[in-house]
Image (cartoon, rainbow, N blue to C red; front, top):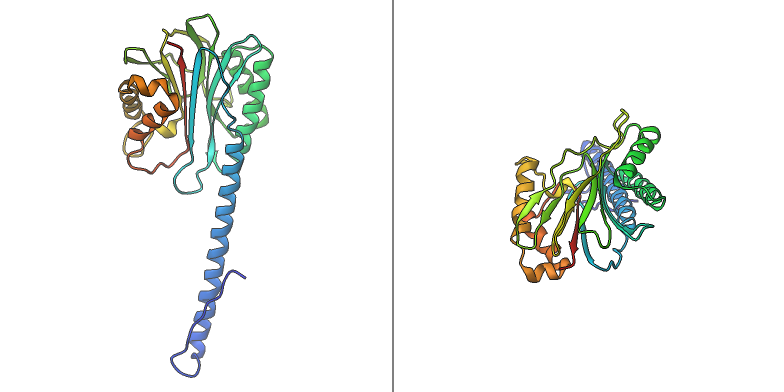
Length: 280
């Protein structure tokens, strides 16, 4: 039973044609209610699964971390966006962000598989580029119809810089201690899972004390009304205008960074943001 529909006839009873029409109306209303209920249930399960994969960020001496995840504001657009950060076997810290193509429960499941495999490859001592190469092979063979983007940044204590690699992911941004922002625009490798062999490359970027690295998924910078390049420029401007007090409290900085990017309050895709700030 989906509900009860109560109607009153203008006379003693409804005319036969009217009764048939009302029965059909009630039947269709019941189907619509059942579909809506299943739709919401599917979305809730996918979102719960996705949020369960977003673990707490570790306490890392010399490196502050803050992250935000926002599901799409409407539609069944729960996707495969994720972030992660964890210590490596050599004492380094790996910061990760990624996005599985597609939406719904399947994308969330594949996201969980990639996240788990990535951690396993990292524990074996692989660097960012090698991890992406292994993930690419795994996705090609196990899920040939799905693709993903990913970026990995490795911070090593005592080394004033970051080693990073990307697979088809939007470029990271770096804010210097003086407020200047630059794009890490080295050409990324192909998306994970594309049906061709590929070896990913590592890049090194100097990071002065007090620098902030911003990793994000395309839902933050891509809108139907404007291209992704315009969104990246807006994000860079917002990152450059953050105050010193906000950056000292990186969670506040993450919220302040999202505010100008989400002025329309609606977004068709999930959003992940991961900020990494070296100690001043």
